[in-house]
Figure (cartoon, rainbow, N blue to C red):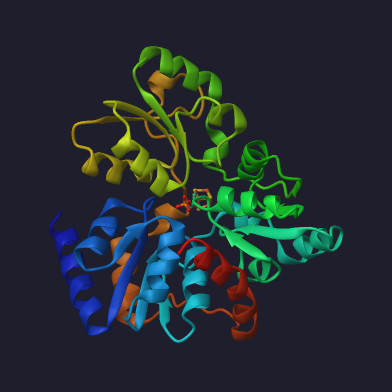
Length: 319
Ligand code: 13P
Ligand code: SF4
């Protein structure tokens, strides 16, 4: 704990000296969430992280999360320095959607509007008409569908299927998945619900359809947080990354949050769901990149300009 406090003090000092602000995702270690808030930064979902980074006056953004979040920040603020505690923190959705293969997929469907999830590389974003995160995907596709547009969706198949079910839109989808959310199991969740009959179920839409079918609320990390605050229940089962529990518990001290099961017997499932790439973010790495300037995110400027078009469209749509 003494070492931890010393690291935090060093980070606070470096943030001031480097004119830097922290932008953290809800899935990173609680230390990085709390420190962001204490120092005038933000902890939020991927949509609001992008907006905050774009709008903040600091010359350096320190993004704790995964690679695509740092890249989005850089694309929106090419003049700022964007640092990440660990540049190897990627995402299975990004890894599973290589730009060249995606380009061929798009070429097979030239009549479709290309809607791409934020969890992708800059090169995949550059091929998109629209970028979305889970907090606006449904509304964007609903609006496009109302205009009669047919959709090409990538890369998360569960989120894509969920949107298709909700909107009835004509969609072809890439087959990617999040390795964390793909593991939630409906059968075990039903058993857990039987043990906690009054509990409400909160589900991120990257989870499989049979898990979503058991949800009382489905949405992005921010939507899950607001549902927990809004709903009149004292117990919740949460089907998203366990990093989310920190904010859920600190903002709702009177409520109980139980992790949804990923496999096996729910009674033995303690902390089954945590993104290995989110877990690469830590205080020591953060202090080091602030000290040395290592861990800087670079995006090719020409590519960044193209990728910015669908991101700006999303930010204007949700403004
Ligand atoms: P949110 O946009 O809901 O924060 O989700 C990002 C993510 O990576 C979910 O796994
Ligand atoms: Fe990607 Fe899943 Fe990790 Fe989110 S939780 S960053 S979607 S692998």
